[in-house]
Amino acid sequence: MSDGADHQAAHGLGITNAVALAAAGRFREAERMARVQVAAQAQPLSEVDASALAWLADLERGLHAKDWRTVQELTSTVPPAGSLEPFSEASLPTCARQARALAESGARIDRREVEGAAEELDAVGVPSSGAAFAAEWFAQRGTLHVMAGEDDAARDRLREAVATLGASPRRV
Image (cartoon, rainbow, N blue to C red; front, side, top):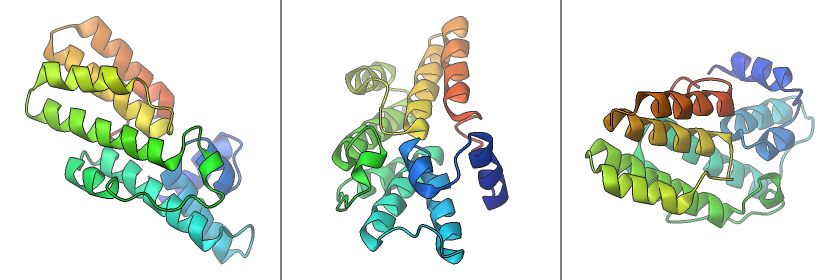
């Protein structure tokens, strides 16, 4: 999504600043909004918060791109939270744990290890770390249903993925 599209999407949600976008679990959009706010000299984030937000946005980008190795590497080190931690329902270590689980289940899906992927998704549950994390969970669960020939269940999970983000997890 372009910066202009992010700006329009944020305003469509009634969200006008990076802190609120991060609180909504929309980390890539929040990171871009933070850059706009800094450029406009309005509500800049602290260096620690900007670093944590960039890390969350990188995790989101990695999940979006199905770049499981990058997600795994990113989750090996969790940045200090500063005041950013309360922006999300989950703490940064929880974000790391959930992203790592999604990366592992995604890699298992890629290898057609259906049972292992399902077990990983069951263990993590629907992530509370942000909209992109939850949408990825629903998309992976939908993919597993497709692989099992369960078309109705697949359609339901993939619709939940789209509803969670307002767009397909692969198009945002």
